[in-house]
Image (cartoon, rainbow, N blue to C red; front, side, top):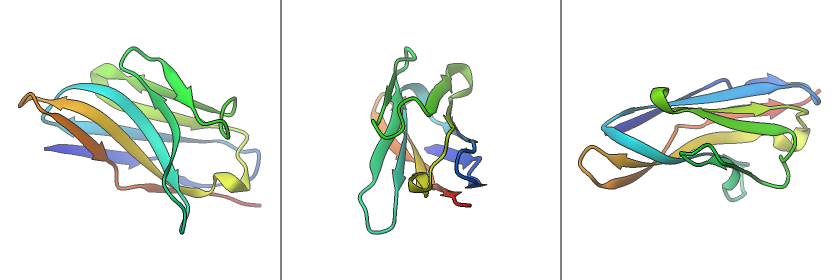
Amino acid sequence: QVQLVESGGGSAQPGGSLTLSCAASGSILSISTMAWYRQDPGKERELVASITSAGSPNYAGAVKGRFTISRDNPKNTVHLQMGSLRPEDTAVYYCNILTILTSGTWGNYWGQGTQVTVSS
């Protein structure tokens, strides 16, 4: 019903930057919250940043001031600009959306994940 395609992961040096993007498609009527999570092996998945349909962002304390989340509503796309990267930002990053489907039901969907590695 809904597909999420992530792009932009990869490797960066400490202090560097990367931008992640996630495009949603399918039986979407509207998207409420869009978010990015990350997960290290052996750890729980944690919220990195989220943004409401009105564009109000929320950040985890560990990334506040370094990462910026934004969305393009007509394109059903969310971006995560990551700056001043640190080795501890290394993780698999997942896109997540809460959406109203054309059927009128709510759906919560995850992307496939994209690896971000920060090392010198």
